[in-house]
Amino acid sequence: MAAALAALGGCGSKFRKYSGPEVTRIVVFKGERKMHLVNGIKALKTYKIGLGGNPIGHKQYEGDQKTPEGIYLVDRRNPDSTYHLSLGISYPNERDIAEAEALGKEPGGDIFIHGRARKNRGRGNDWTAGCIAVKDREMEEIYSMVRLGTEIVIVP
Image (cartoon, rainbow, N blue to C red; front, side):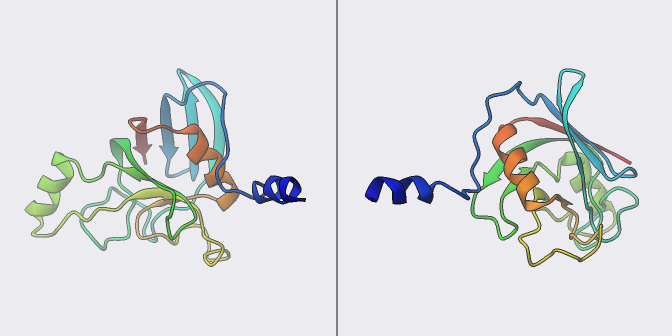
């Protein structure tokens, strides 16, 4: 009985195992609302995404509701995210900070790839404060595939 309960305890876990090819880059096409996990030049997986509530253009400052554009790294993992699971993006970089300062603003931060956390279902496509959102089940897959230091390229 104890063994059966222990086996069931593993069911439904948000933490998956992945043993396929390494994800060497993440490429996000904001205009297409697509994110590709790539190995070399081959897309391993493609996801439909949601973006910031004001998705056109590069993030310039905190509160502008835009998703950044440029080359960043996955710099942290949050297994306890409010949004199911999340992977941090290394925004802001030096250029982002300088651009925000030139406007007399703060650049903001805490940009992530994350799930919807159920409560955000039905909010439409572009509802985040500047993050990249996918379905929770997709986030579980992405979280298992992507490692710290993976490059992420975000283009208009």
